[in-house]
Length: 252
Length: 218
Image (tube, rainbow over all chains, first blue to last red; front, side, top):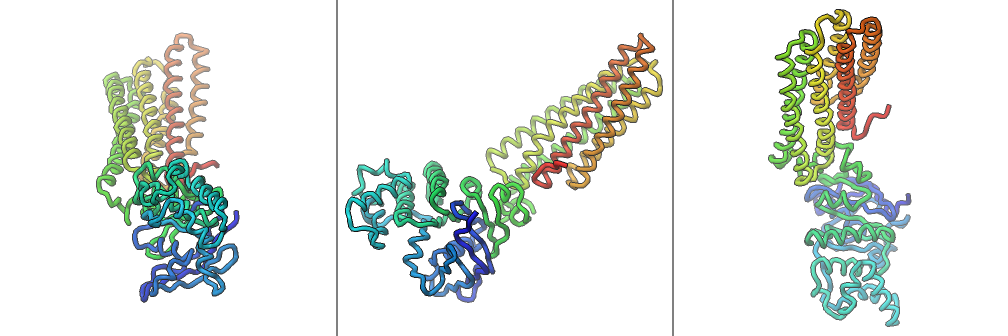
């Protein structure tokens, strides 16, 4: 199995406070990796290091090595916009632009100059919506506002928006926490379909969700990586007592 | 470390307590059933037979609790292994109870003119199986993997003693026609005890899984 992202000795500080302590963790291509741990354990901070979302936080300092396909993503030669084309992100709360459904998806391809031909853009948008499992529900109202959709549909619109720029990796930060169980199931099914084409790294507070959707699980606690491994192992017989105690609801 | 949710902790503890109760009733049953074989005491036999319903009741109570916890709590890791193993262990304990009932039922009916050496041999077999069961029940709560594996190995001894006893009964039966009904009862008693050895072995395999997260394939 090939690693698409490799991290080594990653330390993150917010001012004086250290949020991530010397974490080394690799992510396999076309697999879903779940990052779990109690609030404040550093899982979201670590996720945000992977597409340099922490760059915008002034007091945040990231050290260590983070490579995607052998390229140092923190190198000066890397353009952050280009990096985020390769490593897309879906957030906790669906955040469609106040634009039409079509324009939400077309936004990325447009700013990255994928095409200026209308029929080609149509195809990009339709393909992305289909991959996100949303096309059938919105095909007759592509000009409606993205914000007019239901929460679950909005989240799939955000996934379509991420997919449209042809990323290799999709980061998801608690993508279902604002959704009802059915919308959650649809997203989870989608995650399993998407891993055929993309690598997915998901932060989730729901242990059951991590168990359902991920191939690999990494458990974070107080900024440390406690344990990582096959999801089936982590949830049935973790090696570390802390992992066991967290996933069985003994702390956190 | 206890669960943050005390209700969950209590539910898990309640299963453990019921397992302890089931185990202690079975130990008493085992001791009484063997006494019945030695003494042909019908009253004691009836006590063993009647108490089997307690074992069956605990079996159902634990099943119901495990079923509820799985539905309501989605247990993981050591909790999941404990519940998964409990469900299998109580089935084995319940079967042990059934076999002890057979031992008691057949035990008080055998005539008093059985040669002493056969009864003594049966007592040795019963004693070994009873001790194995006692150690296994302790191991279920102490959860030491080396103990679990060692106790499981003792099943060979039970099997050998059973085979040797059957051989003796058969040769005695060949020479004494009138002994056939008693022989059949003795064979059923011995077979019952031998099966208990198998169930205890199963329980030790579950305890191995409970601790290690995989079965002992050696």
